[in-house]
Amino acid sequence: MQGKTFRRVFGTNTTSLEHFLIKRKVKGPCWLAIRQPQAVRARKSWCVCEAAVDTPKAIEVLEGDCPALIPAHAYMRTWSPSAAAVSAAAGAKGSGSGSAAG
Image 1 (cartoon, one colour):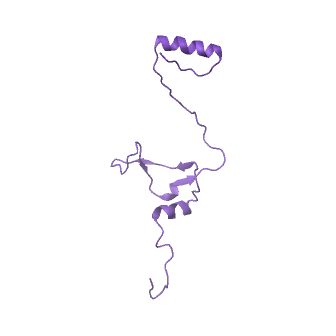
Image 2 (cartoon, rainbow, N blue to C red):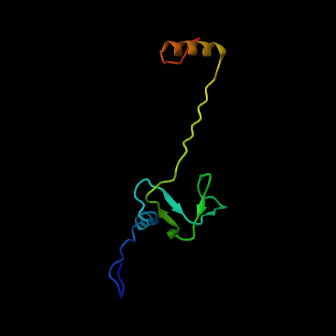
Image 3 (cartoon, one colour):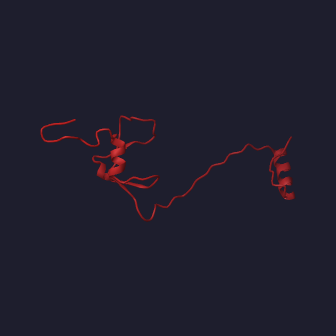
């Protein structure tokens, strides 16, 4: 590409995502601060929650202390009285298998 006042244009092959990541210094997994997000009515992805900002400058990389997280885990298991008795007996013996045939 060439014109009267320029010879080349750099960055024309760069995607908008790549340009955003470089400009906002997003490198690898990190925490982002998103200032004044606005809910999106017409979703463009399968995400449960989508938000938009007026300017890319509203998104910054958090440095220093990260927000505290409370990990949550849910574990469900079916239970039957006979399997519970065998499992408790196996646990008392120290086998650690916790599984019962029966």
